[in-house]
Image 1 (cartoon, one colour):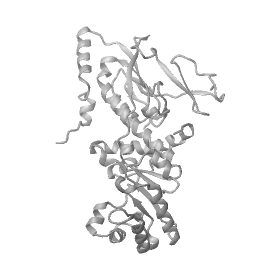
Image 2: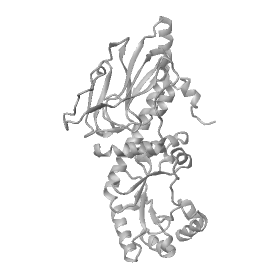
Image 3: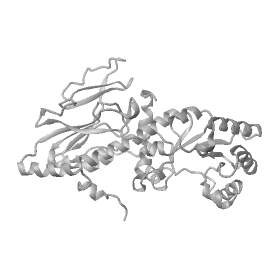
Image 4: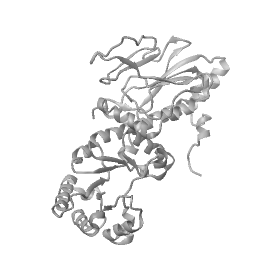
Length: 389
C-alpha cells in the first residue's frame, strides 16, 4: 500500500500532532471546553515576498464543515494577502476543532505557497505562457492539488491528466526524450507524433536529445514545414552556457529561413529570474520544481479570545480582527472585529474600504460558494494590478 492518508483519516483527526490529542484528553478530564476564537495568520512570507495568494480554503472548509459549534469567516480562495493580517477566523468550542489544527494548516500553508509562486511566475512571464510541469517532483497523491493551485495562481495549463480533469482544462505537453531515444531521431519522432496524435494537439518538437539545438531546430522545421507549431528546449545545465544566447541564435536561424511562426518553448530548472530574462524570446515556459516545490507560507493558528475575552500568546495581538481592503489600490488595514466599516476610507486613494472576509461556515453549516478553478484563476489575475514581483 502507498504511504498516504485517506480523506477519512484526515476528517477523523488521525493526521494530527499528538499533543492535540493529549490536550483534548486533558481538557475533557478537567471538564473544560470553552468557546474560543482562533485566527490564521502568516508572521512572514517566503523570501521577503510582499504578498501571497490564498489557497487551500475549500479543503479547509470541508474539514470543518459539519462541526456543530463551529463558525468560520475567511478571505475567499484566490485572495491576495499580506503578512501579519488574518486570513481565516474560527469560533467554536476548542475540543470540537483543536484536533484539526495540523491538517488545516497543512492545507493552507502548502497550497498558498504553490499559488503564490505560480502567480509570481505568471507576472514575470508578461505575455508568455506558464505551464505547470512539476508533478514528477512531488508525491503523486497530491499532484492534482499542486497543479490545481498552480493553475489558480495563474499557470496557463497543467501537464497531468487527473489535474487537467479537475480544473476542466486540456492537459498540455510536448514530446518526451524517451520517444526520441526509442525512435532514434528527433525528426522521425516528431513525424510519428504528427501521424498519430489528434490534430488539435500542437506539434511541438523537443530538440535537445542528440544534437546541437540550433541544427536540430532547423532540421525539424525544414522537415515538418507549416505543421510545426514550436520547438522545446529542455537543455540541461551542463550544456546551457548562456541559455538566452542559445535561444537568440535559434530564433535568428529560424527567422532567416522563413520559420518566424515557429514558437520557442523552454523548460528545465527555470525560476522567476530566468523567466524575466527570457520572456521576450519565449512563447511558453514549463516550470517544474519552482512551483511544485514552492516554499510554504508559514501560517499559524492562534487563539485570540476565550469566552469573548481577548487573550493570546506573546508575540501576537489578542482580540478578534478583520481586514478592511481598498478595491481601488489594494491597501489593507487590520482593525478590531467590532470596528465599524461604514464611512471608512483608504488613506492612500480615499476609496471606501470593504471587509475582506466572507462568512464561510455558520454553526457547522457551509455557506461558502465553491467556484470552478477557471473562475478562481480569473479572481487571482484580476488582483495582479495590486501586486509587484
